[in-house]
Length: 199
Image: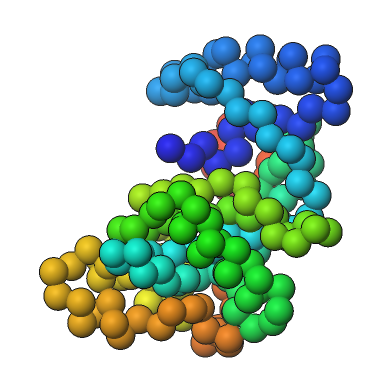
């Protein structure tokens, strides 16, 4: 399951890497488990993007395209600022979608939703992770419905339904223009404590 960046660290040398590994030996919260197999990944410089998809018997459709804004905050290297719904309007977007659909082929994904995270690097698109079998969050669906006209949940249900009518009606790619703009903004606290009441 995804952790939304919890436990992700940027190691600049062996000492940083060792401290990050040791931090992963304890749960993030009382409900979490200890990371059984921490993952070491190359740091990819560039903008982070997401392609939300659905697949029916190996036919893949890109449902939505998102650009993430992350940066350092409160001592953490990658804190979410916002997620912006993007039209599939340019060459960069087309390359990202094509790469994401190729990743589905590479892992042999054939049925249901997938949430694919990528970085647009100086070398081109690079895979961060494939969240197979997972839709993007509920908050994302509340934005894609009004802006695109359907959601990843709609596409996922259509991909798994006996009747393929709804599936055939879905376009293969996100639209080149949106009905309106949308951003899911994260509020990042700069002070520790509890918010007891607003003014």
